Length: 304
Image (cartoon, rainbow, N blue to C red):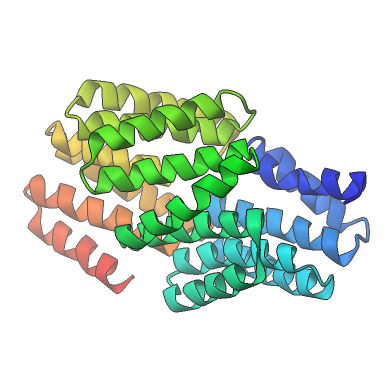
């Protein structure tokens, strides 16, 4: 691989280190008549940014273009990586079957290090879908390979995901160990968005341990970090609302969830996140003694 290829590929981790700069550089690259391989990377970067921070429809358009360009460049590894990114976007858009099919193709096309990254992202999707056994299986297959090639960023991501799944299963001590290991790795990188996510994850762990004040403090710290990056924080809002409800602040939780739904609608964001926010709003409304509001929010969540 040439130095120029290395420089272009650096845009991918930059999405979660300096999101705004990554988006700008990807758009500039597309304006410079790049090769199919480099254009594939640029479209993938824009697709990731739109998927996580913007309009899901735009994300899908860019990621499909990235996939087609990777195929044109005859790079199986590039195509596998894009298929995994596309798979996540499809699931977040509510197209679960198509997303899982993209992952099947990605696992088949990739090998070694690339396949491990694909497996990590499929594990993430399994977690989104609540299929925790499959999530743990894929992430356990990915972590040894990522560690073997000294891929610090993706190892930290995989450990964070495994911890999150452990929490979902009630294994708080296992989760805490993985969160601690992941945060030690993040401290050696410049991945500022991922670092904010690590603080958010510790807030979730504190909540699961019953320490509501610590949970709120950590979630507020994570929100400040996200704000500096200019990235939306819908998952954090979901978690913060859960903590507020546990503290008896149900009206505040409902207001925060409703505001987040409006913001998400404003950018055309992820359907999965909207459904989760609506479910939180429904729970908060029920606890606040507003059954009709609860029913209305829950009905929309079910349709999504």
